[in-house]
Length: 397
Image 1: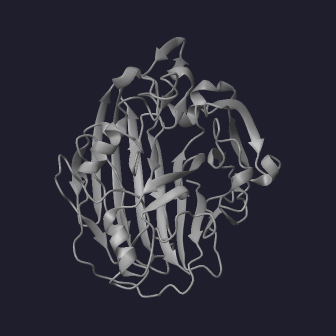
Image 2 (image 1 turned 90 degrees about the horizontal axis):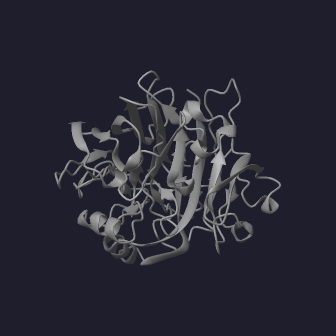
């Protein structure tokens, strides 16, 4: 399996190197409904919620700092019940799994083997589909299959819901580790998220993604423009979109479009050229773009390092692309209190206050057959499973 590694790193000066190895129990991990299971390892607490209809990894307790002021690096509410409220109102997809087909589908329809399928529409005045439709996998009841101190596996059987063809069963596993191995000589904390989906009865599109909102500066500032560096070393192309954020079919060059605003093939501050980035939908300036991962044929892995940085998040994925966007999110009350205790922070992060990186394949590939992406997006009882694998490595440098 070949991987893309993309790195998001904040430039945090004078940050303590203390790593706290044992923390008191915190909120919860797997809910069904509101059944609590807590995954923890070393200085990180990892949470995955399964409530009413969700599998989520919304919170990481990041302990790069003093014990009295731990720092969260992803976005989500303190009270798990707020996820349901958010889903019924703003529907921000906090930290969830999105599927059966992530991102957008043009006109909320697709054709497969001569049959046209009309699926649930939930965006742009119900003219197109986002993250599967009105009731996506982020709202379905997942079942806890197995759990240990460091891992949890959930499953979901989808019986042709929302107009998609055929039955699909999906297993989602989250695990944490900090064992020193050849691939992890520093013993850094690693979260691995994996979905494995099997088409049981018919040929059908399958494309999952994680949807975690990241803010590695611990919400000390209202944006991530000047303290967060992004590196997408294998993404020299991106998928051009129209004013409705639907792919036009064009695959554009990051180096020559918008004066290179989308070029992260070398490490670059997110804010360096963000105001030149215009291809993110109607009346939008910023990032909401799908990048293509172009791996060399003999590439088995890819790593990237930085100097003079304190905290890093390195992500390796099995997917053929990623989508990146920025967002505006309130900061949870407990984090505001921790920031105040530590001498500052904000209670709302602005338009450019967090970064979402969706690990997925080419968006709306099912509407663009000329891209030849069926092998990564169309599955049947005769094919292998659809696998979305991503590894998050938390470190300090």
